[in-house]
Length: 92
Image 1 (spheres, rainbow, N blue to C red):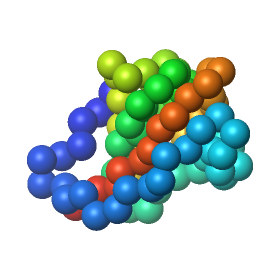
Image 2: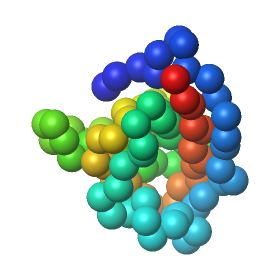
Image 3: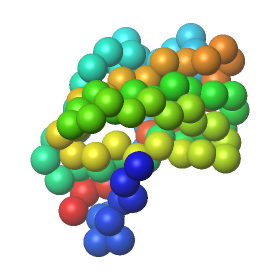
Image 4: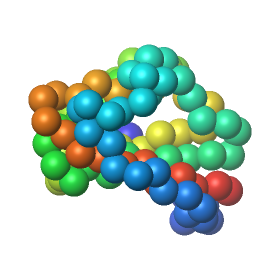
């Protein structure tokens, strides 16, 4: 998994989502805009993170493992039982 570039600046955080409140758009293939990165921070439980391109990769995120969303790359998430997480967005 990639790392957010050191030159990228945090500019927005979402509220916490749970398995019941995760927006439907996050559960299906979507992407960030050019130059926008995101960090998926898990505070409870597990979240399945699927990177759909350029090569398929599936990662189980937890309190010990966060996810990195690269600009313009299609991806989705799926709760694995009870979960609490938020997204932090960065721009270059």
